[in-house]
Length: 130
Image (cartoon, rainbow, N blue to C red; front, side, top):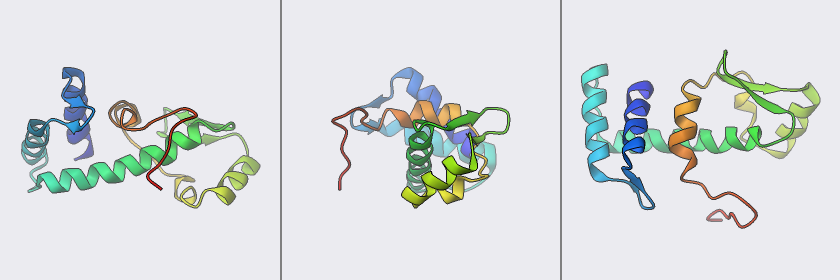
């Protein structure tokens, strides 16, 4: 389901259907119809939005690790690479959401990175809602 959804998000991203306010309404309809047809499951726009929130949290956590010295991406096994156990231990001490990524496989990282990276501010002036 993720693959069907992300492939269509990438197509619509390339068409310019993502603006500063989010996805244009027809994108969700297309994704719902595509996932229903390809995966034979009954989903709604709310299911797609919920899955996007989960993928977005994953994107934030993984991209934060990848921007930290000692982390890299293993494109063959679709997971994080860590230079040493010390790097991992120190990172986990400071980041409570990190432990679940020890051996987590994250398929379609290239699509996730493309589609979800545009939603986040970067740089010295980036702020969160909190």
